[in-house]
Length: 382
Picture 1 (cartoon, one colour):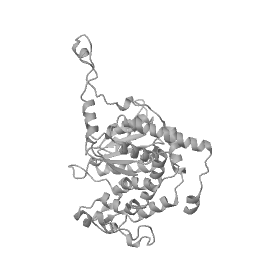
Picture 2 (cartoon, rainbow, N blue to C red):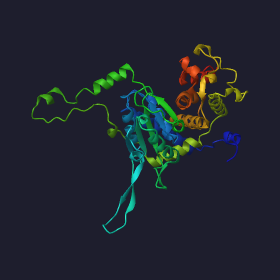
Picture 3 (cartoon, rainbow, N blue to C red):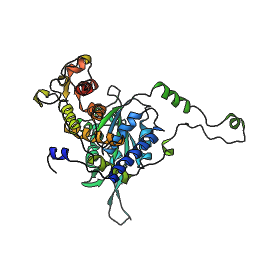
Picture 4 (spheres, rainbow, N blue to C red):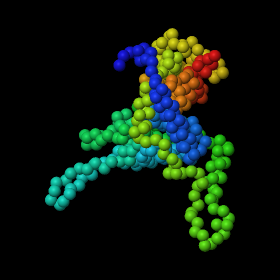
């Protein structure tokens, strides 16, 4: 394939048809984002990051309290993108077979020998919502590793492929909630990004409150005892009523398109510098990179961000940023990503990959503050 310099310097020769295809794809993705937003109110960043993760052929980890539209998000993404979906609820008694499936012993007639038939589990779908995944046992969490990385499951020594488009949305409660099991580090690293959910703003919550508590019938219909009324329903658009704008084949093509978009030298250097410095062994990293002498961030109240990291980001973080910045550029109808794309995605890509040290925890410094310090030199750029 060639070395990195050859790949980086490769020019993307675009014909008019190519440029039009990229522009049309961006318009379709914006339409999809807008359509999902009809059901998932006040969560524009969440919708965009979810689309980015899917277009990178990755998976997304969502953390937040109940009632932040996680189930609605999964159903809306599946409907708008023309994909199948399933949901699994994480509970302490959940078994691996409840997710990946199981072999059933049966025979066609009383005299015939027993045979095994594989009954597929809910993981055999395009979009899988694993709700409250950190309430499941470690055994169940580990059972999903192969499916996330290899897009297949193995039962009885035989492999069963998952759909070409397989996207897992795993939600988790904050670890201080009762009955939670931390996800294994190896599994967390396989999520291209983590997004921390918050409740919508005041205005959006007001709209949700009104639309979910107001009937669609007028008073005349309510007074008329001869008119049959349906049970009250939410007036907010439901995922099943959304319009599909894509399908599995088109998504596969867009996933290939994302990997074809070029990355400029400045973005390339920024990704490498930020991720390589998001490690505890910073002193052994490159001494001549752009961040080597710029960690004294006075307004954040601490120096040398790397010294507050116990466990840092690995190579998968570099891969994730190089893919995610391209996907974000495409959604916004740009051929190449910019530094702003790196800054927008550094937190969701690195947040779950950085474990603050005991010293950081003692100073109440969490991963977001460390990431902000790592990216500050680029935020302060002229």
